[in-house]
Length: 211
Image (cartoon, rainbow, N blue to C red; front, side, top):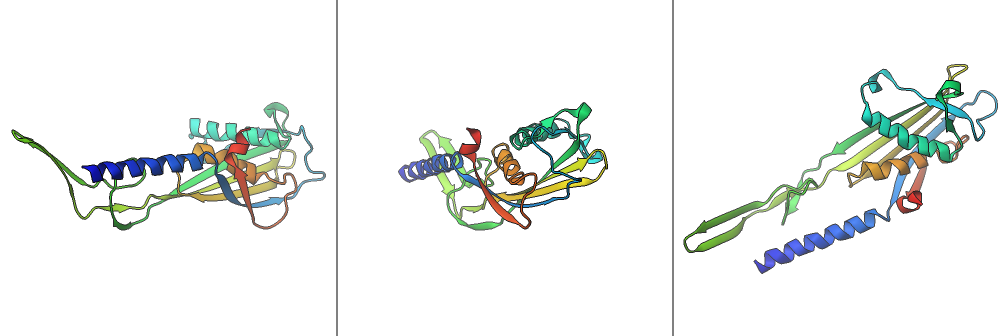
């Protein structure tokens, strides 16, 4: 029993350490951006509206949430939401893939929503007391990794042409999409309206982004 309590205590410490790191970690995104402005690039105060693909029409609250985060990021680069008199149409898309990984060994596991399998645990009781045990081997799987791809397109409403395109790709072991999304949007719009060509690895400090 003492060994079991020590193992549970160790797991708790690891959880506290991971949560502490998550609140101060960098989100790194691989960004590719392209631009072809009709005339001069947009200046601060340029107006835009959100547009949705047919596949996004039924997304409802999820797309609303994504667009609300995008609005904050677009404001930081000088664009302003005003649908009736917009110059630009903005489409934003997000794809998330959870990559499952196979078992990697033996040891204590728990079912805490992090991809671990529950170990063999048995409880028993009777007139002489209760018993507790663990069945071996204890085999559990690695947590899944998460691959996120964010795409943001801008269309010139006068000509109908796409004039700006940016894609941000980020992988992590944590399922913390609400925290990661603002950082990915920040990275995707880095250098707007005329970002450099080629793939850029852009780190964004989550703690700094909240300030």
